[in-house]
Image (cartoon, rainbow, N blue to C red; front, top):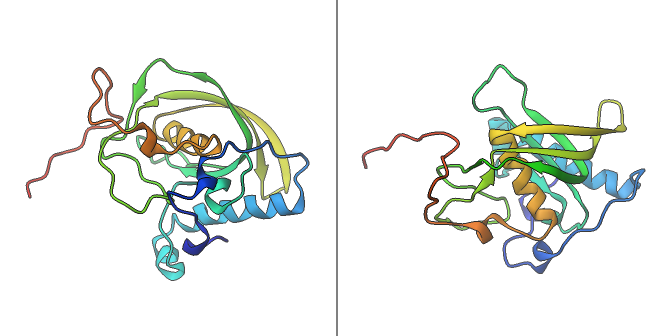
Length: 193
């Protein structure tokens, strides 16, 4: 598994490179990277394990964030509108977004990133819905399966965030103070300070 010390931070030129396709079947070194990415997002979803391993929680992590410029990432994104649905947990290899909705959205509190340690202000527009094709590694069967899937809402936002990393793009490149005509993914209540 990766730890905080393994995650490269904003300013490192590796985060700005366009990543190369991954050869399939996976080499043992590529499989090891993917396994460690996957373990990170699984462990970071558990508050006790986050404290035990002293890591930042995250719903996604891409290979370039650990210094490997290959088109791989892992995500563990819940459906925030239906907690009865299982989260979208994928170890993704060579993804391609093949369709995007015209409808845009954003997270009202802004996005975060394991590679960005500073506070950011602003919102990042994302497509509300995307359809992707990718090779998905199944750690239960130790096999690759090919998947075409449509994601909406929060899982779509997470996928787009990680996908951007593979092209050397970070969410801080897309920050806006406000977005006219685009609705937030959900409303937040204002609190008195």
